[in-house]
Amino acid sequence: MIKVTRLNGREFFINPHQIESFESTPDTVITLTNGSKYVVKEDVKTIISMIIEYRQKLGMWGNED
Image (cartoon, rainbow, N blue to C red; front, side):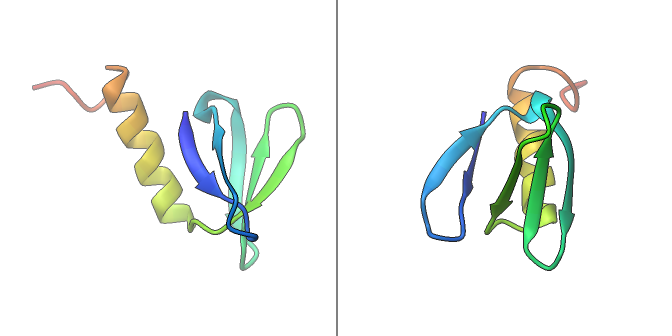
């Protein structure tokens, strides 16, 4: 799970395997595969970094050494 922050400052967790897309509009909007949308404070680059870190911890990619 990755931790993200709503615009009101409240933190919550999202399963990155359920993310269908995310975009800057200029706020970051995360769309899940079930159609749910969340507006969060984190920018797109930060979310990408969190997903990579999460998947590396699971051994899914990026740990070939």
